[in-house]
Length: 345
Image 1 (cartoon, one colour):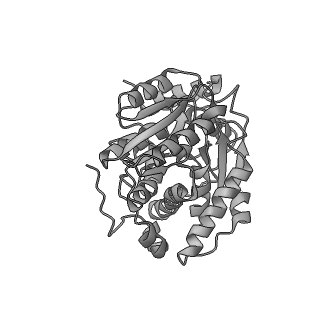
Image 2 (cartoon, rainbow, N blue to C red):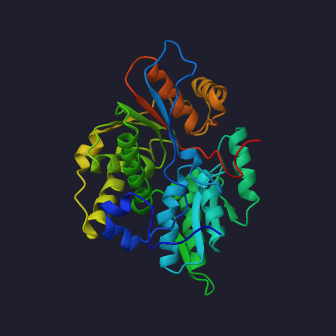
Image 3 (spheres, rainbow, N blue to C red):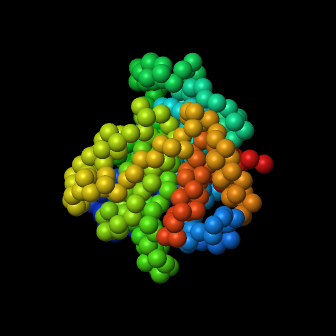
């Protein structure tokens, strides 16, 4: 059973926003802080400057990756509202859906997932198989454009059931509450920079999907007064990953923090720190690219670091491409799950 103790949430955000943490009472699901290590012998030409990797692939032995940080807040809210059933959505290879199901199951909660087709490379197939092996109830949408219809239909059915108290988690866990997990990540990162006495990086490279990871991280760094560029590598369609999505999430975060006595987020300044890069997206969501495959192989050869073609492969490709043209310190934020049942054997 996952530790659900809340009285002393062991995260740096708790000391900065105690009122918010007292209200949210997040769970302790992840093993934090995750490592930040130097990539000192990575095979690149010309020889790059100082490169680092933030190992958010190691957030939990149950299931790693960036979703765990968000679920600390989201599943706490599920319990707070006394829900017993979760409805969410994702593609066939959705790490969000698998992570939500596994952690919900550890808390005695059931999950229903609306899933839709995607290009099925080996990593996505593995994740899909693992999701199907869980107790999650899966409802298949024939297209991503019909997910909204199936969500509404499912939520209405669940809410009308006298045996169910249902809670909706957006795809990717992307809402202001979920983004708080990455506000904490930004503060954690700032503490690691200070304690390790390393040079502040010029930029952090991170996948840009449904947006909560990017928005939360940028907000957390801003709260700590760090001037670091966030290079958000777009890995989903522009209809989902866009500037308006980031503004919406940041406004939600601002309101959450203000309601609990915290400081005002300077949204304009935070947005200026974020650069959306679409040049590594390729032909579409979950379609691989030659640069992504090259990056996956480089990290595998370097230290057995697993990446995948949809999110982290494309982000790593951008990171390595940029590293070849600068001697400034850079960070690759690895959001993939290296632990748990999704790991390719």
